[in-house]
Length: 296
Image: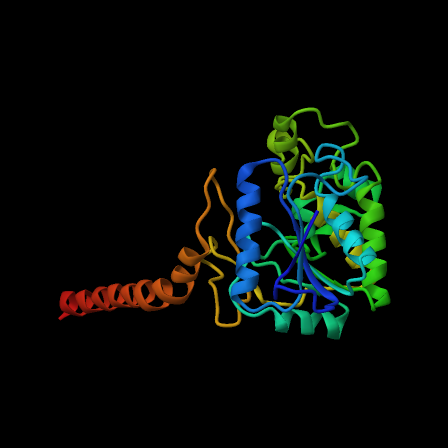
């Protein structure tokens, strides 16, 4: 675990961003880029991250996939932080995080709206739902909670209850893993993740199993916690483009290298609004003009 005071000194802050990237060199690179983005947007809290090993006591990715997230929250809480924001390593901050932390302060938590219009029932296994006495139809009416970014205010009883429940359900041996049997290989892990060969359900509406998000969605539903924030976007998902109020950007990396932060900022703040959009608008105008000439 490493702790970085973003402002260069210990200012006694009770706010922190937490993240983890263990196993591949590219994960360390994304953690460094995330930290750089926090500095660039003027974050006034601390940055707590794991880049060498999982938190103490945390099960591995085959035993309970992504269980490390609740362990990281617990460690931050033990260190005395009160407002804690998890951000997946491939994400970057593109604007100041103050509105996000105000949301955490006001509501006790921040969950982000799903950009893809998906429900939890599309990404949960039969075994996980049965373990929690939830029918498929019930799950299809429950919002999926994106766990790439989420924040908790530990002065809030609701947030503390969520973390306790999330941590507990991730350790039940089925909900996070998605199946009753042990996972032995990465190929089997991928089968579960994407429901290949109907590994987690015969229901054609089921696309796969999303481990931590299923667990978070179940606990949030029980506590009446709903996603509400639009500050998070995915740079690769053109149907829901980056907006002026976007604060955190999901930037998945698909190789061994990563896009430099300066390149991401260039794309978001210059190329997309001042090059790509005008070019697209001109193409549409030319198409309309050709239509007028054809019917003239």
